[in-house]
Amino acid sequence: MDSSRNWSWWIRARLNREDYSLALLDLDHFKLINDSFGHATGDKVLKQLAGLMQAQCRQSDAIARIGGEEFAILLPNCAPAQAVNLMDRLRARVADEDFHDDSGQPIRLSISVGLVSGPAGCRSGKDLQDKADHFLYVAKAEGRNRVVQG
Image 1 (cartoon, rainbow, N blue to C red):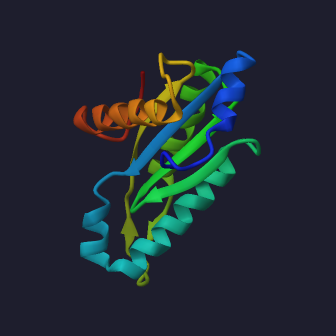
Image 2 (cartoon, rainbow, N blue to C red):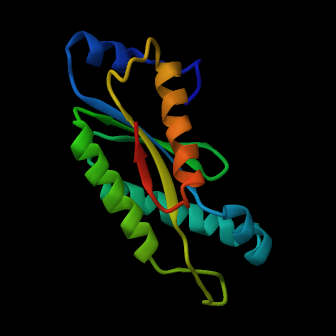
Image 3 (cartoon, rainbow, N blue to C red):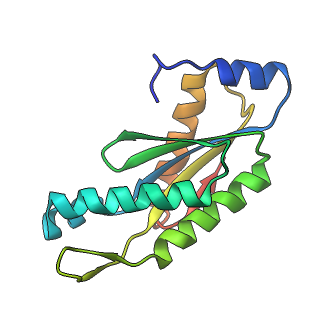
């Protein structure tokens, strides 16, 4: 999600006073997985994570990989408390999931999530994304494997 993307959903939500949330999530210590198990295993882990996100999110939610091991999840019509619950369930599900390398060796994963719910004082979609990114960094700084909402 970058500034060139269509943010009409955000404008519509603000005009209609609809709840919405944006979550940015990142796999914790993903570089270590690539370095230890190889990029093929890293790709396999990312695909498995994408499947978990699809299974845990609502059909109306939009999931996008925005770079490396970072993802964005747009949660339309999602109140702040509901967004926290949804992202915390996803976080716990990832922590409980059995990820493996090609030889079957287990890999433990966790995610950190930065979450912003509208309108959050944002004047643009870019502001919303930047704010969610800030809270993602707070989640990482506070020890990872957590959801931080702002």
